[in-house]
Amino acid sequence: MSITSAMFTGVSGLLNNGEAMNVIGNNISNVNTVGFKGARMLFSDMLSQNIGNNSQIGRGMQIQKVENLFGQGSFETTENVTDLGIQGNSFFALKPPTTAAPVAAQNAAFLSRAGAFHVDKDLYLVNPDGYQVLDTAGQPIRFYTGGTADQNFSKVVKVEPNGLITYLAQDGITNLYYSTTGAVGLPTTTVNAAAVQRLAVVSATDLTGLEKVGGSLYKATAPSGVSAAGFTLAGNQPNGTSEKVLSNSLEQSNVDLASQFVKMIITQRAYSANSKTITTADEMTQEVLNLKR
Image (cartoon, rainbow, N blue to C red; front, top):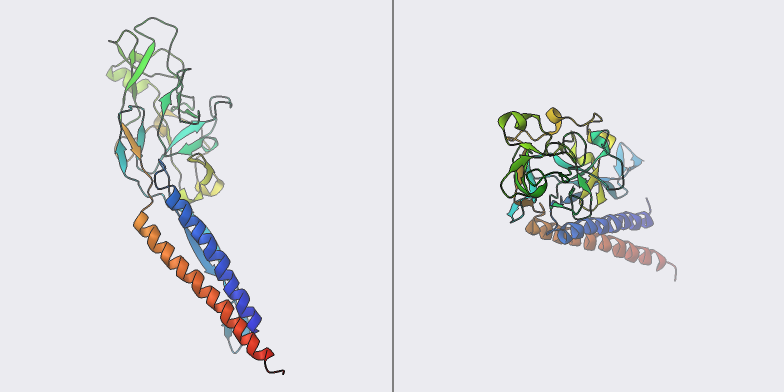
């Protein structure tokens, strides 16, 4: 290999460590983003050149993968009942307001850990961007109106760890379970609790296979292993033990600033070291040129 090749080896380190700094910067910029999951840059060496005698010389490095890290974030307690966090590895399921309902398959829904929800003017439970939260039938959660005062929706008063939603009717006295989209709620009895639809959660076999699409949303990909089956009450309700929905809570970013600053220092030093490789190779080239005077 020539001295010029050493320059290109250094260039690979410069370019890829620059991209690593982008990942670190994105993590730091989202330190206060609800439900955000940080990422890390993984590198691998490039194909080495054989020089004989079973020896090889490396030709630099490349980006192997930008891997999302789905560790549990801490929870912030809020005053809003419909601020929801998930304790566990599952995700809220959402759909855009412009697409038809129900969502036919779990892997067709948008997934999110950001549970800053509210009830909009049309009585849909939505996120700040208007995406509608889905129930265990794959339908958008929409509360009832158009009946009597003891049936019409007034406000959500409770979301249980297993996704069961209770709302207060407009008479200010009657509590009803959300039953299904746009339908009148059912009395809060044990029998009805087992039958009504609940807030849906969706799980992925390989969390790192999920694709970020912005707005704190993810889309399922084939490697993620999200089920292609339809939504069901049995399969998509939180179990209330290992998977819990926490009301009056928002999951914070899982980015650790101290760790990111350490990685920033290491990446900066690696960038500087690779620049030294280039300048040193340049000086060696100059020495060769100086042989001809």
